[in-house]
Length: 294
Image 1 (cartoon, rainbow, N blue to C red):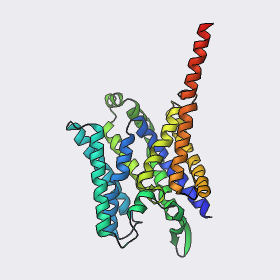
Image 2 (cartoon, helix red, strand yellow; image 1 turned 180 degrees about the vertical axis):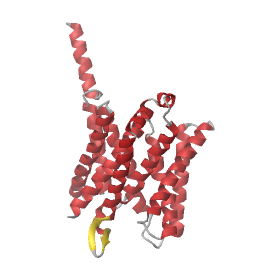
Image 3 (cartoon, helix red, strand yellow; image 1 turned 135 degrees about the horizontal axis):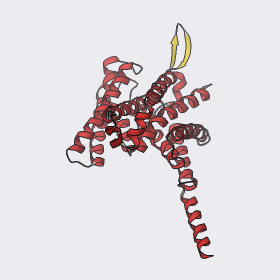
Image 4 (cartoon, rainbow, N blue to C red; image 1 turned 45 degrees about the vertical axis):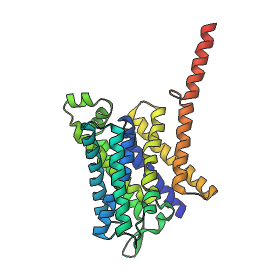
């Protein structure tokens, strides 16, 4: 039964991250996802210190707040003339370092440590159960990720047209009256939700892999947004199953194997994508050269 919960948790992480990851890739904001995945750590620690629990909604809210603070600070520095990559590096390393310091100072004696936040605990997800009246309803992480996926799906579904236009042509979106800034920060809020919901399973460092790698794989395979989202989710879920099987065989980190599997799928798409694959393009160019010599 533990295998089922681990695979279900990994699949839910893949779905949550796969949806928002597509929009990050399209907006060329992959490193923003990395920044948010690290910068929410102070919010998580502060919420834990206030509530005394890792399961509180306060932790989710605090992570969302720090995710938005990250985006606001990066935007502020960029408008001040600092380069984009430097702004991202300064903000997320500073906030992440603050989170590490808070953990080391105030959370040493409790089950909230850097390893849990950085690397996740997907192998133990079936131990932390949600019980009502003595009846087990399954792992808390599954419920949290399920609710997160529902919220992300509803918001993306309701504002699909707006997100699509803002991602492909922000200038056009602004010209036709779409509040580009609002949808930008709404997307960042969804990224923060997906990030903090995934901490318990894949951790802060590896969640960025699930945010970006499956979405990048899908980007190489299609130019249609709806298909891209579906392929991103599928790539993440396939990576979960392959990675979990590999982790059992190698006796290695489950989360690490999942992201490595996602990387292998990306490599396959990079080489053999029907439209953008390196090998396919080389073969097409060679075929064209041969036809011209005849």
